Image 1 (cartoon, rainbow, N blue to C red):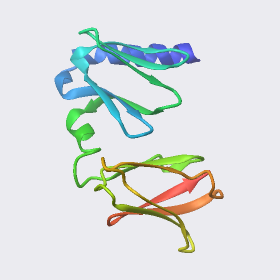
Image 2: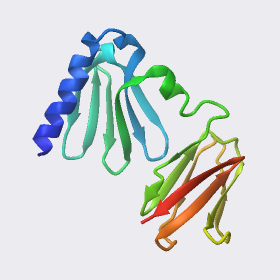
Image 3: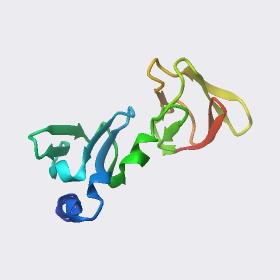
Image 4: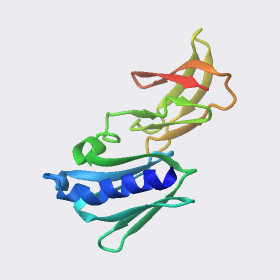
Length: 161
């Protein structure tokens, strides 16, 4: 099964530069802490999926490795403008919205309060965004259920598994 997934992903990454407009598309690896590693498709040599994580290799010899423990998601063929909006000023991203452990926030103003309330309105977690506007919030102490994360004037429903 892993071999099939590996073959599909590598084939897509390798074939994508032949697609019209490939210079506007990227392979993006997003870590749980919100950091992004992006490489435009024409510059991708290959993507390796091994036992420790994902390795993105560029035609210029660049090598970017992300362990599975740190990996949130991989986008193949993503519009470059769409990726830029994930962390552009004024745009707040919250992920994953269904988790048993951590939830990540990016795009907030530094020191912005971030709160998590249960469905009864009780405050369960309170923190602030770091100097770079990100936060990783540990939900492991919460019981399974539905919660609301508030940051600035944004509210996001979270499902704690």
